[in-house]
Image (tube, rainbow, N blue to C red; front, side, top):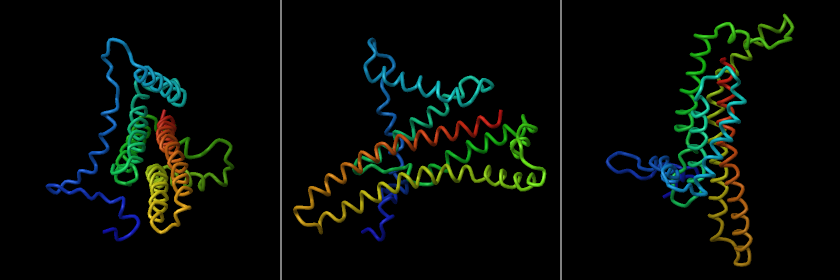
Length: 225
């Protein structure tokens, strides 16, 4: 029985002390098209165009000094987030990206690796980022404090942004669905239309939030070169 509204997002499947709900994170692997067909399918062509577009986008943000193959890491993060966001829109599929456990597990190690790489290999460059160009001498100490705090909270903002946006739409869909049994018969059609429009909006949010997560991660990594 649901004790509160947020309990609908709790992992409920428990077999051998293992929460099998988190296996929904791997469902996106089933949708990846085969790369060994004799004749490429339309899905395969679309997949290659998506990868190429994301590669060019991330390569531009990273700059010419980035290492070869860096963009594939962010492309993988984008595809994983997008698949999980979309999978959560289907009934009875656990939305893993609405939990801070998953988003923080991805954001923190990635941010930590960027910081360690930057401070170890480009120490002067990292110090220069703490004081923006054109800052008056009287405000330099405050700018160092502000920039340091903004760098520290980056993994927190990454995880909360994705989880909050995903859980907000699901909560609204749950609230609208629970009011269906108490509504008048002539209002049911309006409720269905409203939920369909909200579902279309959530589909757009699923793509946008995955894109924002990967783009911000790319921008954070570009600062350490």
